Image 1 (cartoon, rainbow, N blue to C red):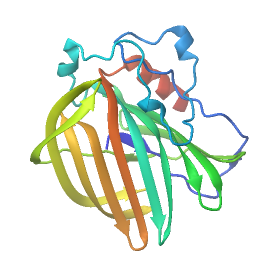
Image 2: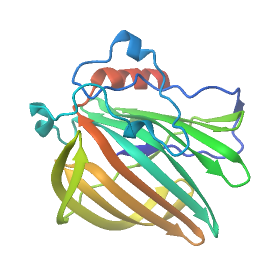
Image 3: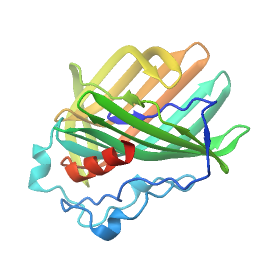
Image 4: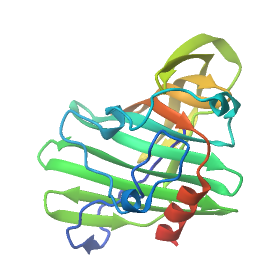
Amino acid sequence: MALIVALWRPGVEAAPPVQPVSPAEVSTSAAQPDAAAAQQPAQIPAEGTTPAAEAPRGENRVNATFFAIHAGNYEVNYTVYLELCSGAVCFQMSGWAVYGEGPPGNYTYGVLSGRWPGLGDVVWEMRGATEGNESYGVLKMCIADLCYNETSKPVVVKMAMEEAAGACEAAVNGTTLRGALSKRTHVRDFLDLEAAANETACFYNGIPLAGEVHIREGEKRAYMRIEAVWLREFDEARYREVLETLK
């Protein structure tokens, strides 16, 4: 799954309450973000909504370069739904994440929010990037007015294309794309789980546009679903921006 989900562990140092801040809001046009947009933080999605689902700025069309985008040269914005269960107790989080992959490295940032049983409203702000053999990641987890920082390496969750199991379709940038369906089962580390994961994904030019994963270890279960909202070429300026905030 082309997405970085950071791991939060209790017991880390508490940080003062802060508002989640991510790199500049992203436009669907091929132009670089302007200076004003670069100062705008990503907004925490209101309950039941996600910024990634909002109508993008500019024309919602696929340009000629779209079809040349491929694994190793792309940026994609996903809506994300996550459910974690322990026994009969479950909680859900939803939000968005941007993921880019290019020659110099990968980057991601996003926000998930939800209501945890007994804890109330919870917000995760995550950022991550790679440079050569180095990986950097940070997760800020806020419960009401109390925030914790986790700066260990994030858990990278990336769906991989295996032998095609048929055809699939995904609507991205206002256009329906026909791709290849992939299914596989393998052992994966995900948050505090290490168990067999059943993955189903729809790939276009090697890029996962939609997918879901089920993981179970004893009484613990996890389910994640992603859907791409828009897709464009790798943005090196944004990659450098995310990387600099982490180093």
